[in-house]
Image: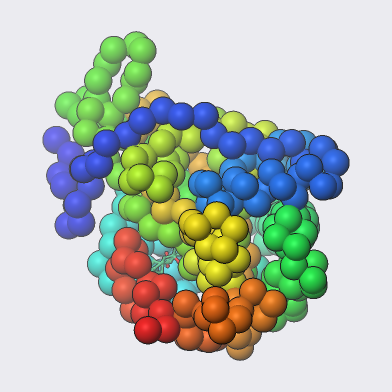
Amino acid sequence: MVMPSPTPTRLTKKTKAVGMPTIDLSLNRSMLSELVVSACEEFGFFKVVNHGVSNEIVTRMEEEGAEFFGKPAAEKKRAGPASPFGYGCKNIGPNGDMGELEYLLLHTNPLSISERSMAVSNDPTKFCDSVNNYIQAIKELACKILDLVAEGMWVCDKCAFSRLIKDVDSDSLLRLNHYPPMNDVNNWDPSPKFYQCKNNRIGFGEHSDPQILTILRSNDVGGLQISLKDGLWVSVPPNPREFCVFVGDTLQVVFVLAMKALTNGRLVSVRHRALANSVIKPRLSTVYFGAPPLNAWIFPLPELVSPEKPSLYKPFTWEEYKKAAYSLRLGDSRLNLFSDP
Ligand code: GA4
């Protein structure tokens, strides 16, 4: 029998199946910027195809992940605990959240990766090479998407957001998640149609990402779900050739006023989660979190603020926001701590 973990792992809200917004990045720029903004507005999430990230870079990164998670537990533990960076198993963050996964959390700074690589890999040079190449390629993809967001929103400074994650002091992270199959025979539905865990246990609980933009890639095993504005959960079909893009809390702050003006809605940092429902194959995901430097100030773009449209948030630094995020539980809302009454 699978024992329940200390935090709730059963699904409570309804789920449904809808098409996912998928954007072909080889389309022309003006069309692209419109598509990106409307996906950010509607879902806070979209997938990208024809993204230009080389297959070799992606494969080498995935091989490093598979090699690490395939090691004996005692060896993996030597790369931990993940506070703030390194190997973690089931514990998520500092406040008692749990999930059905193990992971490796890395700062994207090459020096930090180099230091960590000795404990992670038997071939640290190869590990650093694969990870740094992956980060470089995904950072370029993230910058391209952020520039399209700025263009689509008619922001004067088209590089306003990409500049933050390009900064040498950017606090961006890379996370490798490994969700082992829940192959407990008492706990899965053996009908060949689904091969799915009966209880749909939670692999990584519901949350939004505190950063600017998240780019996730997974192998061909499903589990990722996003929450629609009406609170319903939608499964994201896995596709190793695509990348999933998520709007983070920080991007929401910068654009919230503009979106209100244009759509009477909000640019949402999307809530998402991962189910641990594969019974056959592990799910492996590689997640890049694009973040500003710690001392960067976060506030709505000046051209979007006026006496009629005052800022909804007090200005704060990324360091302050990060501290607040780490003082709360995974699923807590954090932006309201910074709202301007
Ligand atoms: C969610 C996004 C990233 O995975 C992460 C997570 C971090 C962690 O796992 O240590 C947090 C979580 C994330 C938000 C709230 C805090 C911090 C766990 C947690 C309970 C690395 C991040 O930056 O924030």
